[in-house]
Length: 143
Image (tube, rainbow, N blue to C red; front, side, top):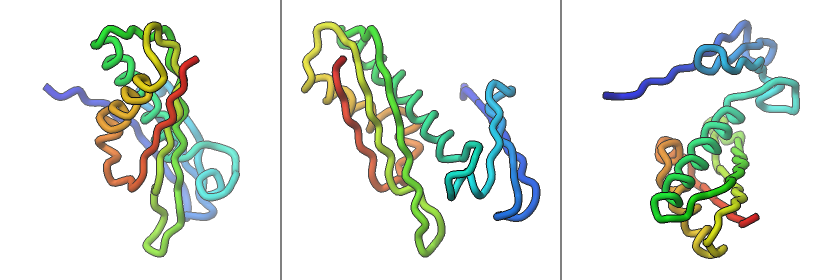
């Protein structure tokens, strides 16, 4: 049985003068977005920030799961995901996602933690869904 989740968006007007709203789930988060918030430094959110949040959340849970499975129960994991959007000839493209994770994990060394982070980067469900992104990186640091 598939687990289904949904979000929604509405857009009013043209590309540059329009504006919209994105709603996550049943309204747990609502954010205004516009051309300015997506392609400039305007107020509001944008799809790339939501992708970054989804990736950070999924990666962090997956990393916790694989660490715990092997006997390294994390006390704390903090992840920041940065999504790079570039304007290409064929249109805007997400070209890179950088993950930075800090962890407090008893009994693990930095090199082993980095290997687990690489595994999570390559195998969490959102990473797999984002397989069309040409470059994904991860930086892992122990607290």
